[in-house]
Length: 151
Image (tube, rainbow, N blue to C red):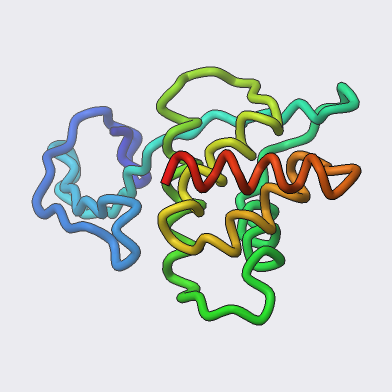
């Protein structure tokens, strides 16, 4: 690590702590040349994820869109906001860990549905109705039947 005071490349770590948010590590360093101390922060680098929409357009991944779509599915139903945040975080981490830079919106929808199913059946069906774009009552009933068979 380059010393911000003298520019020397050699330093030693005096103290390390996790940041308050738990997303980075704070390191207190001491330059071996000038003996002055400085602080650095270490964070995990996340690569940008591109979502490929059904129409072929591309946009940056936004976890808030996942949370908002789940909130619509839970309209007038009890849900803990922490559960929705946990689900969005799980999905984001799964995508990051896959090391693919592009993912289809359909795949994201499937991940949301598989996590909603054990949390709330009604929210799952509501989300599925929007995700699958049901055009008539028959296709909606088929999804409900499929859901009941899997249960």
